[in-house]
Amino acid sequence: MNQATAPAIELKGISKAFGPVQANKDISIRVMPGTIHGIIGENGAGKSTLMSILYGFYKADSGEIFIHGNRTPIPDSQAAIAAGIGMVFQHFKLVENFTVLENVVLGAEEGGRLTPSLSKARKLLKQLSEEYELHVDPDALIQDLGVGMQQRVEILKALYRQADILILDEPTGVLTPAEADHLFRILEGLKREGKTIVLITHKLREIMEITDTVSVMRRGEMTATVKTAETSPEQLAELMVGRKVLLRVDKEPAQPGRVVLEVENLRVIDGKGVERVRGIDLQVRAGEILGVAGVAGNGQSELLEVLGGMRTGTGTIRVNGQEIDLTGKHSDARTRRKRGIAHVPEDRQREGLIMDYYAWENVGFGYHDDPEYNRGWLMNNDALRDDARRKIEKFDVRPADCWLTAKNFSGGNQQKIVIARELERNPDLLLVGQPTRGVDIGAIEFIHQQIVALRDAGKAVLLVSVELDEIMSLSDRIAVMFDGRIMGERLPSETDERELGLLMAGISDTEKPHDAAEVEQNLAHARGKVM
Image 1 (tube, one colour):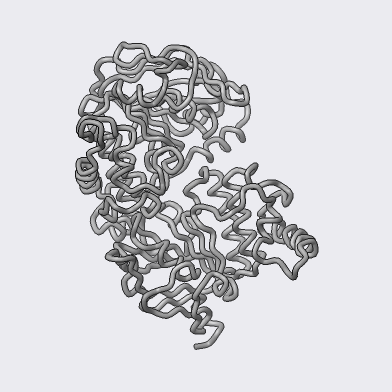
Image 2: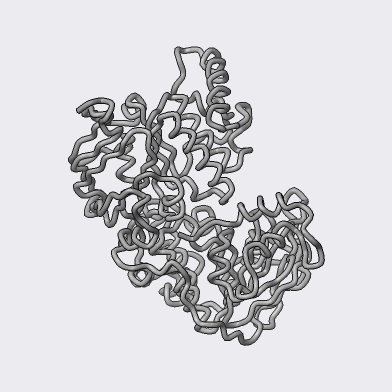
């Protein structure tokens, strides 16, 4: 085959099993040079496993890899790098207390002395930063950078190692919509320079916006490869899930009842003495979903945390008419659960799960002192496991194995474990933060249905999401936060993105827009599509 017309990547008959789980089954795929090729599929479809084989993290049980027409065995990541392949993982592989420069050089030092490598890297880093709009301070510590900047460091690492094939695994899962838009501009620049990009994602908006070709995986197999311009989100969703998927929330009008949650003059000060929540008043009734919209960092996270007992605050909180302790010995999450509050935290890995524990253990966390899980002084592990199996089946967690540790599930299936644990407790009040972050289209539909079903059962739901589509479609009322305050409330049927964007920019009902650019920038942050 002519080198000029050969695929940049060709995989033939790739299979990989982990014990009884067949992650990849006889997969063949071709990616042409100088293109952006999307790979989509549900959580657990085998996308990341396939790319980890290409990058040498896993060894295939069978099959062949060709790079630019040449058969290329890739036993480890060093072989992948030598073949011109770079990979940016969903969870970054950076040393937190090293600088940007040190992370870029790490593993690619030349000789025994580090100083010449750093000097050379600094010059090349500047050149790459300017060429691809990857502007990052080379002397900044990783721990001081936001996730968007950390991702740029990962891309710089790959380019520094002269990668001409770049794999990105769920690159926007931790980014704001504005950061995602900037990443797409970077990828377009890389494509113009002749780089080949493989984009693993479950977000249909991103596939339609940025890719040239898209391959669809389902349950470890490749089901289709199509030109992006010749398909649609609806067709791709059906190929991913194996059935038609409703790309909107289907729900009846709310029937609000008694007040379940009352918040008066709530204030939260963080560890640095900064007031994050500034005198909030709000109510949530039985049978309704109150959505809290706002650009990340405006107090929504702190609001959820103090309501869930994860941090202290001042003011008054009542649940079912009874006041809740905000600062004393009964201000913890355990007491909240006993008062009928369930909490799906924003960060499932840090706050919702213990990653090295089994799924059945995680399903019981926070509720392990319930009588159904105990035999006198001893835990009834059989009861815990039976309960976990039931929830895993009901919430379609894949693989359906309660003995897998949480870290061995995909992000979307980790989220299902947390959702199952909290929703199945039949709470009076559900606090839910970013319920579909990093979750595929089929799971999004399912999670939304479960939240609506809880509302229809007469429960109160407080939803925090940075996805405006999710807020608009799930909420019965919308409260908008800016700089720790509630700027206003709206009914979804009586507002639109622009009006919400004004409130999110801190422009109240009585003010007129004074900075159109600020409003547009704010809408760019908020206009994430739940696809």
